[in-house]
Amino acid sequence: MSKKYVAYVGTYTQEKSKGIHIYDLDVPKGRITERDEIEIDNPSYVTTSYDKQFLYSICDQGVTSFKILEDGSLKKLNTASINGMRGCNIVTTKDNKFMVVAGYHDGKITVLKIKADGSIGGIADEVFHKGMGSIAERNSRPHVSGVCFTPDEDLLCACDLGIDQIKLYEFDHKTGRIKLYDIIRSQQESAPRQLLFSADGKFAYVVCELKNYINVYEYDKNSDKNRFELIQNIFTVRKDHKSNSAAAYITFTNSGNNLLCSNAGDNTLTVYKVDKKTGKLSALNSLPVSGEYPKFLGVFPDDKHVMCMNNENNTITIFTVDYEKGLIVMNGKPLNISHPNNMEIVELED
Image (tube, rainbow, N blue to C red; front, side, top):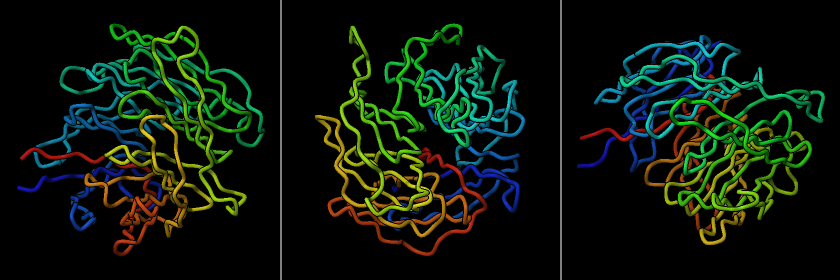
């Protein structure tokens, strides 16, 4: 029996979208079919618990929790306040006892408790970033754009593209309190947007929005000096890219053999080969995505197709990928959806 998958797409709801769109995946064909739409104000980012039992979404009121039912439908549990401006990114602990919300607009990190039934509890801790950036129009103040844990969950990593820093916090798994441990200072005016780790936890990859490059770090939790050592800096766009380009999102293929990066303005998808021994990247190609502002990439479970969320022209475009040649070929017509922002794919139980 073939496996069944469902995709949850977070959107902005100022126009036609009502909230979270639920799609069924046809993995062999590389297509998705919309099944339902859950009404919620501006679910601009969605994520799941590690056991895939719950879905958590940003909303205007804070964060909303859902129970993922057997058929992939969603049952709302509750909504909780983050005591600040609306968030942009969420990460949960592996035991699903805490979630961390990144605040782009107010430069705030909020730690929330998660109850045993998956619903969201009260605030465990909240920290405002301080400092000034180097670009008045964009980096004039803190903007926490992404949060993630180190593979061992010792540290919480908070990318702040407003002050060109990645702040590292010790995380107390009993209380949810965070304490500043160290700071990775990115290149001036680079705007570190998002950080992700390789599957083996040995390497970290940071996409820098304004400089259009990826910084690759070797991660060693037992290091007496810096846990993160910069080993590579590689561009996300071609030499003849558009001047208003901004690196948007990076993700690994499920095999971990390749890394993909979307570029807004330039409106391209760049395919890299990953050397798993050294962690370094080799650019294979950078090609158009047939959409505007590709804000997020979703990879099909078999790695053969990739979906591009085109936030500005309200489409999802799907491509078949040849990783050896670094080629992407459009697979079917674009799908219309109002301001898609990100996606979570979940395998359903038989």
